[in-house]
Length: 495
Image (spheres, helix red, strand yellow):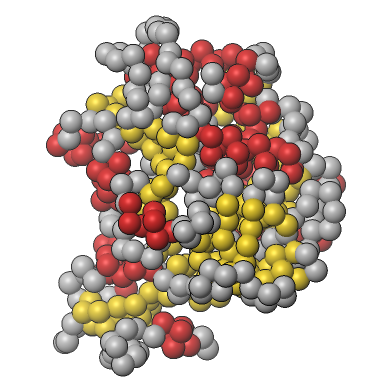
């Protein structure tokens, strides 16, 4: 039996999830996930790692679906609920998903794909017959999850993690952050990323804690929930903390103090997925009384480094290696750098992913000969704490908690009829971490119409990938080999 399922049986009558103005126990979660697993197994005894994609709203039905796929022996492929059809089709086709589970409201969007594919579709909102079949035994070595991350290639890569990888990722956080069944957290993060799936949902469900879901992000709704006093663990990205700070600063002194009194009682507040500006950390501590715990991780690893739960949380640093995670800093030849020097972070441990889905060459390139994963992030150790200095590729942009491929955005922009060439970079921004900006070279005799381009991009890519600022230039700066010099390009966007 999968560990997360076994743990749920130890907390059978405890509240697992609050969502859609209802509470659900672990008994509800087990029964309904097993029911859906039985429906997935309607004509087979075991899905045997068949990919099952799902586009389900955050809440009880999301967790029910995830657990059902795992218990039926499938590989879960969560889809982003805000992505346009082309982005969704890429994931569905790349994974070869044979089953698609959706919330009813996404039927219209996905019907064109369903009509042209052999993919079986299930609407999660429909009433199911209460049929429980014998479920297969799932070994931990099986593939469990495929999450998509943008690398330095034009197309996102599917990161494959096994049940053993997930167990390692979750158990190390439970130990390091002292999760317990007494915890009550809230999920405000996207559920097609490791931060929301592993750090919030899986950790809370693994220990028998309670997780509350909000239908959509709203600073007021978050603070209304926090003010009730039941939540004691909160995790978010810097962009969310920036928005919450703005909301607090517009309140009266009295209302602000009431919320601060409430937040001071929290057990833990965590920030990650992008670098946390020291100014934001300091403002949040002043307004909430909470010193944020900053950590470092990525889709391929789960979490790898964290500031201590008990001990000094240093602003501007991501902390120390987590239990069971091995870290080295290396030079361009993957030799360990001398103490005190900066180097690329490489990682080894049970938490590290298995492979990039059907990309053997990319997988091989991602690891050293000794099996260390190359993160591409540069860090330095100062007084025992790791400080992230940047990335070894200017084509990766971290904005609003997302890791985004500039090359992927460029490929889309070049399809627009009035754009002849373009280059996308990220520039430092307090709210977003990095702001996505684009330099455009127009087809001769054309005028730039930002509104038209923006309206077109909505149909082509996720909103968080769209450039926030444009600059029209005559030609892109290039080196002697014809490659765009992106560090020079960035200077054009800085006043």
